[in-house]
Image (cartoon, rainbow, N blue to C red; front, side, top):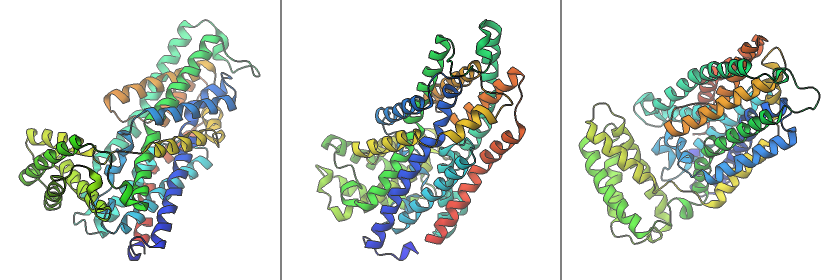
Length: 460
């Protein structure tokens, strides 16, 4: 359907505008869906009033997006096959963007409506994998599902398995330590009316809420920025396909890297060798005489970006291949990371727009998931010591993940942590709620893969 649209036509522009609106709605849903995990404990322990809690969390999410850089922003974009990411006519990319945003948004809204705490990142990853699978089978990938980045799939599955267990066990341990050493018994009872907990416990809960909210902004909250940029590139390729602010020194360094990339791909390239080699050589001839990126004619910039994507995909294939010598894999990783800087950029207005959507979303619609975490997960009302245990573990694990890159889901850690404290208190867990949450977690990846795959097939 979309493949028959003329490049730059009114219909194509309308589709891309629709994509832009969809990705902003997804970021909005990310705010009220995921960050409910950060505010549930401070609300149900009376540490902060609901309005104050969500406004504070929204502000910290906003700041997290703004100060967090953009390395994370482009992490998920690499899941998209380069031939779909930026083809010369851009029409497959339009269908891909619609499929990704629609599938992830539908799953986000559905789980939110049921009050199920779920990971927006996992929904987005599933949607991206779906269009990669569809492209491999139908779009001429030639390799079936070999075009899919299975490392991301295993990362999600590992996070799905490890995060709730870590949250459960560690929060249970912290809660038992609290019960052993804290003598203020009121911290182990539901709050009386609107009375907040003792000052130091209240401060601990607010600080952990702050940390989790900020970390969400710097990590998960940024992942839509790269996808917003893809939509903007489709709408205004002449202005945004390439980083026009690259300095002459950066261009010279990129040219040397393209020469090295061409030699490495020719020597160690895999299934994408021919595409990558051709693209790297085209880039080398294009960049060698340049003094500034703006010298490239506006109409040719999308094709240059496509060559960059093809070169990066070939380098990624080399660095992940077990049959390639270790020295070549290290060289491929270094070249890949350096060349990524040529396309990894986002104007300030894009980052601010993403931060606003996330921050405002945090302040809207949080009640359904907060109620699940505070009332429906355990058989008793959440108490201050339980909230502090779960959020303390979440903040610690998020910091650990930030330093190590280990895949940890905030949603799963907090939910598992609250469940662990409920067991530790002897209150027990409501099994029906727990099974509903577990089913949604397990189904997130296959459901969003199927949704985006089906939508992309219909559109392309």
